[in-house]
Length: 119
Length: 107
Image 1 (cartoon, rainbow over the protein chains, first blue to last red):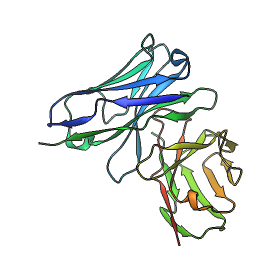
Image 2 (image 1 turned 120 degrees about the vertical axis):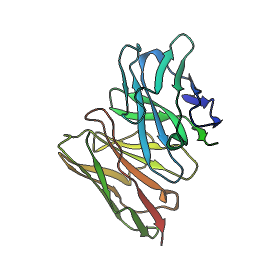
Image 3 (image 1 turned 60 degrees about the horizontal axis):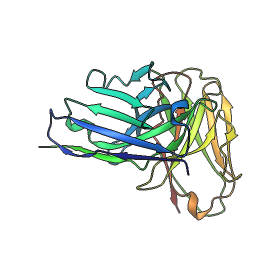
Image 4 (image 1 turned 90 degrees about the vertical axis):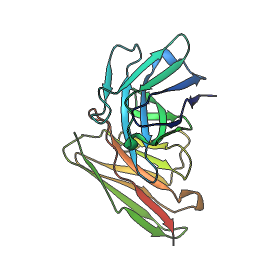
C-alpha cells in the first residue's frame, strides 16, 4: 500500500525548534518530488516547501524561508522538515505530500502531524 | 505569487443536486489546476488534475473544466459522502498556491 506517515509534531514554545519526519512506503520514494503543506486550525491549505527527487532543488514559502529546512534521505525513504525559530502562526497540522510529476499534483498525502507553538 | 480565488466560500445543497464551484487565478495558468476534497480531520484527497483529468478511483460524477484563469469543479449528483471542503490549487508555478476553500454543506 502506498503510504506516507508523519511524526514529530507536538507542543513547543515560541522560538523553539522541532523536526518533522515523513516515512514513505509502497512506492519508489527516490523517484518522487515531495512537499510539506500545512493547515492552521480552521483555516485553508498552505504550501510550505518542496524538494526534488534528488534533493538538489528546494523551494520554500516566504512565510518560512530562513527558518525551516526541508531534506530527504532516499536510503531511508524519509522526508524531513526542520523547523527553527517557531512562531505562534506556525501552529498547524503539517502534511507531507507526494508530487506526481506526470500529473503536477499532490496525489498521496500523509495523515498529518500537529504542531502547536505556545508558551 | 499567483492568487487563487474560489467561489462561493460555502454552499448548501441537497443529495442529488448538481453543484458547481468556481476557481479563478490571478494570471493565466493554462490547465495547471488541481482540485482536492478534504473531510474533517482527514488529509486532502486529489480529485482532478490538469483541470479536467479525473484521478484514478474518483467517481465519474466529479468533473472539471476550464483553462487560462477560470475553472470549475462540478458534481453532477451530490451523494452524502461528497459533503466536504474543496480546494483548487495551481501547479503552474512555485509557490503552488491553493484557493481558500469551498465548504459544501447539507441543506
